Image (cartoon, rainbow, N blue to C red):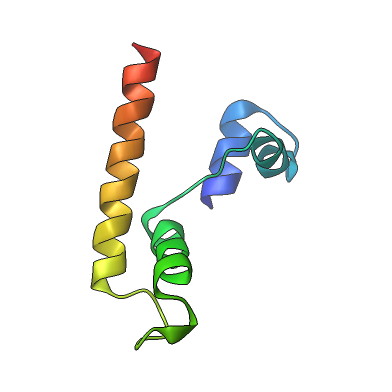
Length: 77
């Protein structure tokens, strides 16, 4: 089951509506793979010496996700 499917099932929202609602609120869903791809696209860009996210992009993605989770947890407290 995809991340989107799991989230829609958990929130009991019609299929396809979850991501639309999140985007409309200025939010995004990220996994290590999607974050690594975004980091690669933004920071490596067309001048990159590699065509896909490399290990450094994945390391940065894991760090970014951990930082976002920390901030979210502190906000909820």
